[in-house]
Length: 194
Image 1 (cartoon, one colour):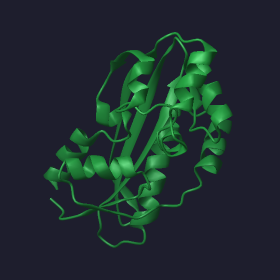
Image 2 (cartoon, rainbow, N blue to C red; image 1 turned 90 degrees about the vertical axis):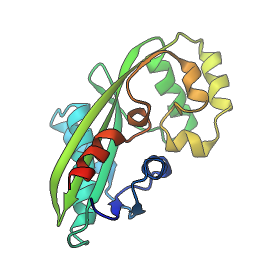
Image 3 (cartoon, helix red, strand yellow; image 1 turned 120 degrees about the vertical axis):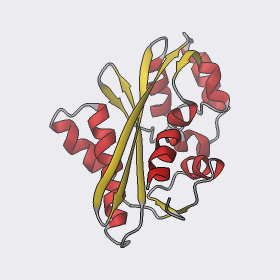
Image 4 (cartoon, helix red, strand yellow; image 1 turned 45 degrees about the vertical axis):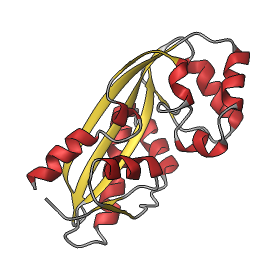
């Protein structure tokens, strides 16, 4: 098992999940322009899952090219609503539109991870969780958003499952760490095999 891995992500939550699972890591942001990549893949009619996998790989490869022999972990999470990619909101108005779209429906949260070494992927894994949102009025959703700080809203997409966001859902099927952006059990399994 490597003594330390590099996490190619600025997500504090992903770093916390690794720490909690005793996986030593250092953070090095990939600075991949996700919007350009998403736009290009959407033009090619790529599914949300393919987009998530591609972004995770791109982040890991980009950082691992600069770090000889290091184990680099890239990750990406997206929401898939009936095949439509739902990205993180850029504003509170956009966040409300997303919540209205998800209201009363089931969607998948897809988390993809990729481990790269010397600029090439050596392992990847994707896991899905199914979340079914309760029915709310628009005012109830506005009220929910008013309780969420900007920091949390922009870091966790429109819901923070380990906090206030849990109250939005009638049912959650899947691993909580996956929903928070990192299917850590599979990562641990792979890292331990190295």
